[in-house]
Length: 117
Image 1 (cartoon, rainbow, N blue to C red):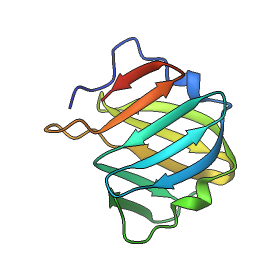
Image 2: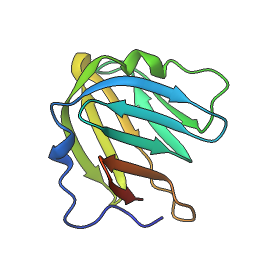
Image 3: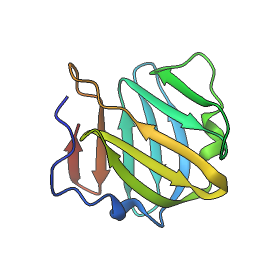
C-alpha cells in the first residue's frame, strides 16, 4: 500500500539467517536472527530452487512448503515495483513480499524499528 521508503536499504537483510517461519490465522511471519522479522498480511511469492515453479500464496495458506526456507541465509535482496521485496536465500530459493495497492501488506522489523508497506 505504502511501498518501501525510498531510502530503504535492503542490504540490511543480506547475511541474516531465517530461523523460523510461523503461521497464524491472519499472518505469516519470517523470523531472522538479530531480532529482525517480516510480518506478512496479504500475499507472497516463493520458489524452492533456481528455475523451479514460483508459488503465489495468500495469508494464511491451508498448506505450504514455505518451511523449506528456514535455516537458510539471505544472500541477496532487491526491491521491485517500489514495494515488492525479493529475497534470495541459500540453495537458490527465492521469496518475495508482495505490496498490495489497497491494503497494508507487510511490515519489516529491525528490533524496535517498524517499516509498514
